[in-house]
Each structure stands twice: as C-alpha cells, then as structure tokens.
Length: 470
Length: 142
Image (cartoon, rainbow over all chains, first blue to last red; front, side, top):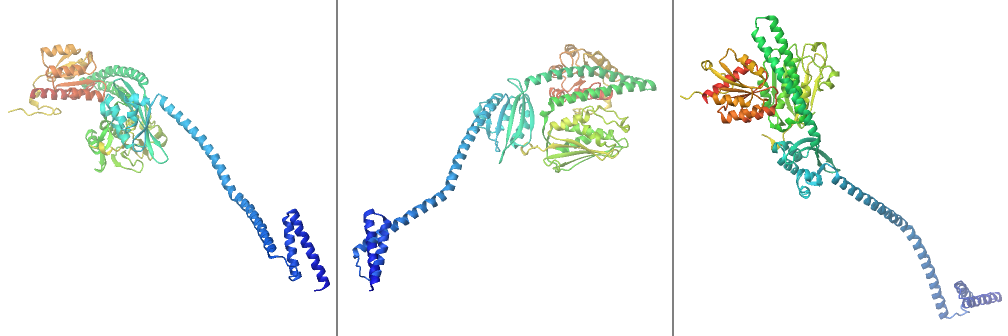
C-alpha cells in the first residue's frame, strides 16, 4: 500500500468517523446514510484493514432497511391517497348529485301529494257526480256526489264494477231498465268514445245527464262517467216545449178541419172544374202547413230525446223488407232493396230507422223528375265505419251542387236551383234524419258527382253487442 | 157453424155492408163531428155525436154503438174515455182514436189501452170508412 493510498484511506476513515459522530449527535438519518456510504468506501479501500465489526454493520443495515421501508411506505401511502382521491371523486360527485336529486324528488313528491290532495278535493267538491274505472271496469274513483245521485254508499260504489252505475240508475228510471240498456251496453264494452245519455229518474224526480268519456292512460285505458243534475234546465225546456206543443196542437186542429172540409168540397163538386181546382189548392196548402207543423213537432220530440228509449238489437234486413212493403209503387222510380243476410244486428229503434229510410227514399224520388231506380243497400264494416253497418240510398236524380252539401242537413235549408222550383218541401226532413241517426250514435252524409249525376245518401248504425242480439 | 173470424185490416164482405153501423163520434170540436157526419153521408154508417167524455158515456148507456171514434185531445181526455168504453161498456176491439198530432208514444199507449186504430186528422173518407167497417165487423163476430 502506497503512502498516498494510506493518506486517502486515513481521510476516509476520518470522514467516516465524523459522519458517525454527526449521526450520534444529531440523530439525522442523512448523516447515518453518509456514514454508511463512507464506511463501505473505507472498507473497500482498506481491503479489510479497517475492520468494522459485524454487529455494527448489521445494525447499520437494519437502520437502512427501516429507512428505506419507511420511505416506500410513505410514497405508497401518498400514492394511495392520490389514487383514492382520483378514484373517489366521481363517486363523490355522483353522491352529491344523488343527494340533490333526492332533495328534488322529495320536493316533487310533496308537490304531487299536494296536487293529489287538491285533485281529491276538487273531485270531492264538484257539483257533478264522477265515477272512474280502470280497463277491467273496476271503479277506482267515485265522489260523494255520484253516490248521492245514484242513491248508494260511496264505499259500495268504490268496491264495485262501473256497470253498477247503469243498474242503480235503471232502478229509478221512469222507463225502467229499458232506459239504461244503451248505457249498460257502453259501460260493459268500455268503448273509447264520448257518449251522452239523459235519464229521468223518479223518487226523487231528477233529470240526469250521464256522460261517458274515455280515460287514456299510458298503458291502459279506462272509462269515466259524470252525472249531472239538469232538473232545473230541463224544467225550463219542458215549459218551452209545452208552449210549443200547445200552440202546435191549437194550429193543427183548425188546419185539419180546413183540409177535411176542402176534401169534402172537392168530393161534392166533382163536375165543377173551377171549384175542384180551388178546393185542391186549399187542401194542398193546408197539407203543406200540416207537414211543417208535424215535422217541427217531430224535431222537437227528437231534441227532447223521446225516441231514445226504443233502441234494441234489430235485424236490418227486416226493416228493409218493411220499407219495400210500405213504399208505394212508382213505375218511374222503382225501388230496389238489397242487403246481404250476413248483415249483423244493429242497435237501433226500428220505427225511427224506417222513418229515416222513408224520408231518404221519398226525397230520392222527389228529386228524380226524370225517373230512375232508387237503390237501397247495406253493408257491414265498410272502411269508413268498420264497427257499424252503413246503409245507402242512391238515386239517379238531380244531384247536389258541391256548395250545397255542407248545409244540406241544416234546419229549413232547401237547395234553390231552377230545376227544383216545382218541388215542395219543408227543409226539415234531412235535419230530422240527421237527428235520428245521431241519436243512434251514427253519422249521415251525402255524396253527389254534381248536378244531374244523382246522389248517394249514407248513414251508419252501431252494431248490437253480443249479449243484446235478438 | 161459427162465423169466420176476420182480420181487422180486411174490409168485410158486401153482405154485411148493408147492415147499419152505429158510430159514436166523441170530439169537442163540432166541426170535426160535422166533417165525419158529412164523410159518412150516403154510407151504412149512422153517426152518434158526443162533445165530451161524460156525454159519450151517457149515450153508451142508452145505446151501445158498433164502433167509437174518439178525439185524443178533448175534455177529460180521449184515452181515459177509450179505457172506460173498452173495460166497462163492452167496446173492446171497437175503438178508433183520432188525433191531430202523430206521436209514436201516444200510438203505443193507445195500443196498450186496447185501441185498434189510430188515425190522423183529417182522416181520408176511404180510410175512415174502411176502419169503421173493419171494427164494426169485428164487433159482430166477437
């Protein structure tokens, strides 16, 4: 070993000892590390001359392991914290969002509860009776007013089927069960259409307007019924009707005498041409007036809904047969009636339907001055009305101008064209037809290809329900 | 041999036409009674007149008619009179109602009460005569 080497080694030894001293004095880990590093260099350079005891070395290494371990743990812990912070932040945000949503939901819930209570209060306090049922017909809501009008307990109503409404009303109807046939039929079918039925109840006497309406939910459809006491309104209408009726009867009586005596004159003066013609004018004009009064009273009766009670399941071909028998023969305008046997029964008042048909056939002939076949036909389930029977009366007569069609079914409306001048009428016939058809929940309309091309009058009648069929 | 029962809408055979028919006409309107009397002039129908229900019942007590023609609207009402004549005076199947207003409900009520014909004013002579003859024929075979 050279002198220089010995000097360097001695300096290393000194620095090593200084470092150890610093560690001992200050308990600084960095000093210990320095000491350890210097110790190794001393050992290497000395080639085993400087003999650090094994115990010292072990102790130093143990200290180093602890230091290293401590550092790793610290780093790991810091890393962990960083990672956790990163990982947790979306959860925290979600949690915050959830908390907010929850708060909002609670507010909405409170609002809903408030609205529900308000709705309940409205339903309970409206002056109309209200019954609502689900798609199975089970009553889901009914107010006290409905229970009062139906003369039943509210909880009984709530635990039953919506068709019970018809049964309860039927017991008190003036016309008995027949009055509620239509209502029961609709409630059972739970049709998704609006419909109105007016009933006169007894004990106590109440005029009740029953309205059905569909309740459309997201998944299933129910039905609602409102019951309105219209006694006061109807009393007023009845007073007006009575006045009109009295006046009409008072007019009709003397008019009958005028016609009757004019006919008598006609008979007694057969040879006298002038007297015959005069008497014919008196009788003819009298009959015209009488027709107006009859039509007017008829309209009024339909408005009052008198006819509604006679509806039942009827076979349309039977009505058409009767039509063919009742209509007088006319060589110029022969009547052709045709309906297949497959026409299902309709829910209608046969007398009134015959009245509509007679009116349409009589019009068809009246407005066919040059003659031509009048054809009456019926089909079920046309594209325009799949759930109904459509009846058509077609002629080859004067036809109807397009602009007259929208007003044709209005009261007292008559088409004014030169070719119609000699044809008399009251302008009430088609309006009566429309009222009758609408009272049957049907529709009436007309098609014409224009003047000279004839007309086709169509009307629909609803099919009878399975259990109502004859 | 029992005579054949005729349907009401059939006009009786010519043999029975020669027999006189007594027709009670009850209407408070004198002109209607006059008209019916004039229409029936020259036929086998003799017209008995009554101005109201009481008067009609009084006449029936004395002489039972073959047919009755009653006004729907008259003092006491035509329908109560019809019921009384049918139930208490043996006029079942022989009552004709005369009305100035066509009302399906009235017609139904009349039919339920046993009224066999329901005519609208003014009745045509031929229609009235056929109705009276049919009803009177019914009274003979009943």
